[in-house]
Length: 235
Image 1: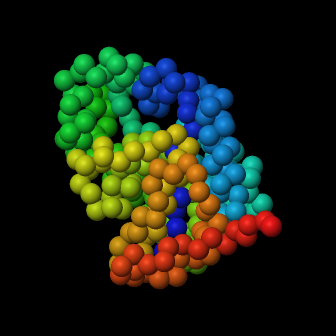
Image 2: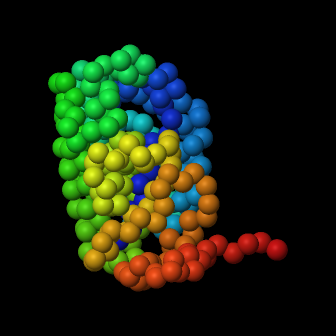
Image 3: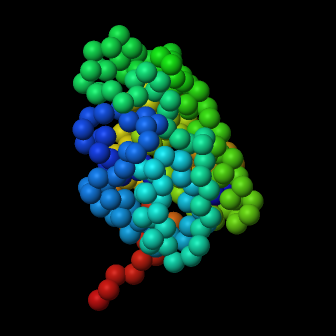
């Protein structure tokens, strides 16, 4: 199958103010977020992407454009509702410090599979629709471009954490163990036998090895030699 690079949007004004933005309109990247997303675009410039799929929310579309600005080719740019932010319902727009006093907060932290946000969606439904969307796009890109295809999905923290938990074979109740920072890059290859997670929550390091297809579906016994960069250093 193809390889998906999961990119969280850069920091927003709501992130900086400690507000749970959810699906609120008008939430944009702040200057730190722009710088973070630009850096992600610079890292991905060495990877010929076949697609940059974005959540419809403005902060993700901004991040997607900053990635596209560094691409030499012309990736397709679908907007996908399936990877939009969780519907936090009545929690949307509220301060995280206030929400931490809510009876539901410990359940969100320790048993997210049981959480249904008041007036919103369940975390289990959030994971199901986001994983389904990622796998659907991954199969489509592989069918069109071959198993060496690499594409990006720009989404949100809880969405990416739930996708990574699924790829790692973790129960949703363990997904709070995963961290996904603003504009971080995580990498998943959906192989024939199992998903393979190549990176989580990275904000540095060379990605030029992704320009070559991941050839083996088998896990390297003993850990293997690692990915070899195709980026040549200058004398």
